[in-house]
Length: 179
Image (tube, rainbow, N blue to C red; front, side):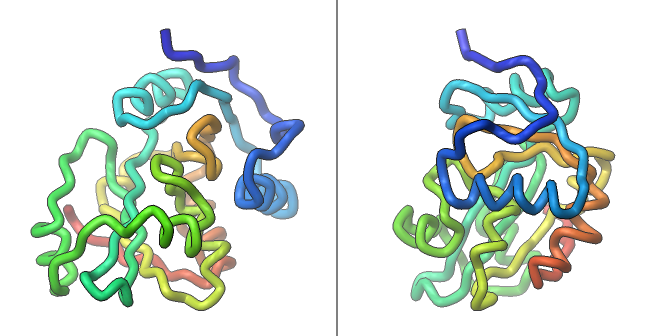
């Protein structure tokens, strides 16, 4: 049975990564309310569906992509139930085909391991290497469910705060596309 804790409204007592600590510091400084759960390691979207049921909001699918030369990077946020096709993504942005970025670059640029990609990773992108691309279908939800920078911590925050406050504060202007 996949473990999901009861809902909590405070930061973890111990942080597993520097990004996770930065996420909760940012929420505290901005006085943003949130709900969070601790879980077993969540790797599959099926795990995230279960987490979303507990938080009463869907968990988004967050992907980190790059071009063949690993010079252009994309943090893509879409709905969990939507199949992702690089061909459709590349067409929507009118760019060359992309693929998943290597795990080493995911760690270096966003500070996370495979399965923990989150919009909050852009706080570590101080050189603006990453384009944030958000599927318009994500905007249909009032809440934004995502990883806290680990594969064992998930949260629910205001979608509007993510789009209109957090991303501008992190110096990233999202591009909205229909995927």
